[in-house]
Length: 307
Image 1: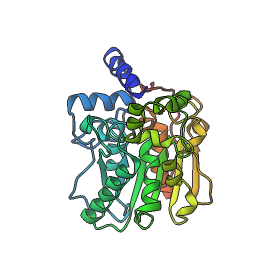
Image 2 (image 1 turned 180 degrees about the vertical axis):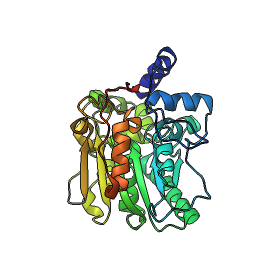
Image 3 (image 1 turned 90 degrees about the horizontal axis):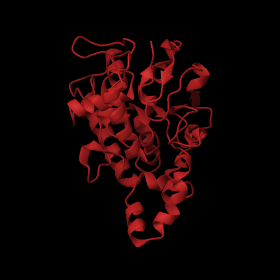
């Protein structure tokens, strides 16, 4: 289903012109598109390149933002997912780092498809690389979809609790996902030897509620009481379903439903990391002392805000 949606989005990208509000940009990088289509365009024109503002390995965090920010994509890659948020964070003074983890036969075009334990080890190693390069004790994590869920494996099994300060999960299937009902077909697929072999190597398949790996993930904020968790969800999410799967409980948790902040925000799963309402909420989560209300606009699925 996700590959089909990506193909449809690619077709729409060339058929649709989307007008976007100007964002914060530095002299050497363009304004953020605030559109999933913008990320697709970047991947088509500069495949394999990190998003604007990311992976300056000489960056040293300033006192105002002492933690480098690690951005973790979902079933996609870092360029497509973070083409809007990365330059906004960089322009705000953060050291920003991304990686495409959990790749398979498609290489860096599609990440987060490897088994969860394998993806988690790659994420843990990348966090250590960022900490070593920046000299920082801790990082802030911002993850979309699988990238918001898999780090719980890092917390529970790979010693990640002491390395993370803020943990922001965008549209993450923290309690599993029905994928709008498609997950019901997984037992049928696994009833064949070939299908069972396929799902055994499929990270997203491991997020079916009740699976052994899912239970091992243990997405519970109580495991790390000193980490500040923020979740962000959309009522129109078609992949992390039901949309409440992206919420957490606990005194160290802030749950954000984007439509509560902007009723005309119709963002779904793929647009959410680029949604200007969500981008503002991420800035607020990382620096609550300087939080401010988001500008509410009509935000369309995939295409982003109208103006």
